[in-house]
Image 1 (spheres, rainbow, N blue to C red):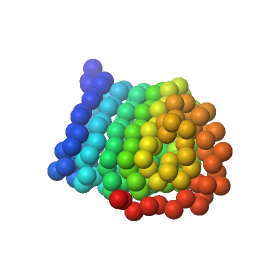
Image 2: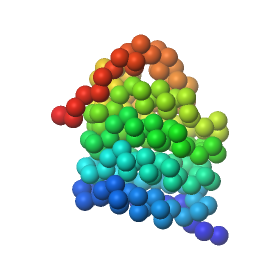
Image 3: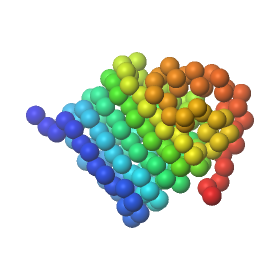
Image 4: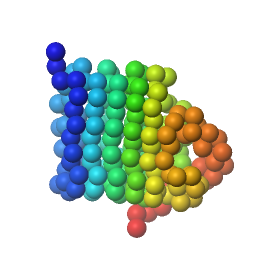
Length: 168
């Protein structure tokens, strides 16, 4: 029996690059069911690193928590990559992109349509992103699949025309 749960806190590791994220993703143990990764304030991580991680998510994963808070090089492509590669059997998802100013509406629309059918718990923090500033999510945090889909429907017009803002 291999490792079933992995938690790594890499907060404020400003030397972590996309290559470091790739190395971590390549060493992900098979059979992993719970993954919790914190990349808060890892300012060198870009969409390339997030996309590589997404492509390497273990297929048996039941619970995923990824925190990219204050990673100001991330754009919609990061969320879209995660949305495309979420494991089908995923039951719990928490994504934190607070203070990622280059995120916009297209990624949230992609995520809302790609959530796995087995998902029972979802929490997505988009506080202080260009998306929230332009479309005004109540509380800036989605706590259910239905809440996320409803918000996308309610703000569909705004999301289509939401331009990405350059980081401050």
